Image (tube, rainbow, N blue to C red):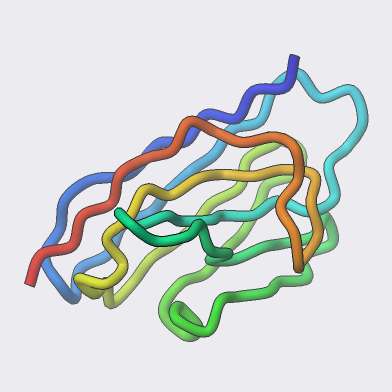
Length: 118
């Protein structure tokens, strides 16, 4: 059974940084695209960033230049470094595996809350 476990969320002030981690276990075949999505109250889930196994990346316009996605393939771990956080970044952040740059895959983590206050 594939499991994705996120960590690293929390409450910060605007302008501060957080780093999210997602560890994937139970894989039988390598996953190409790993991604982070977020969902704020009353809003649809949206792509934050995605990365292929070879390191090609894609970012949502709202985080371009502030967030950085990376991964350690040997450790089945994907990271999201979030800098210059804004109150509008407040959301539950979800790790996702197995999709592509346009659509999420089948596997989701349980989510981790990020709260940014002004």
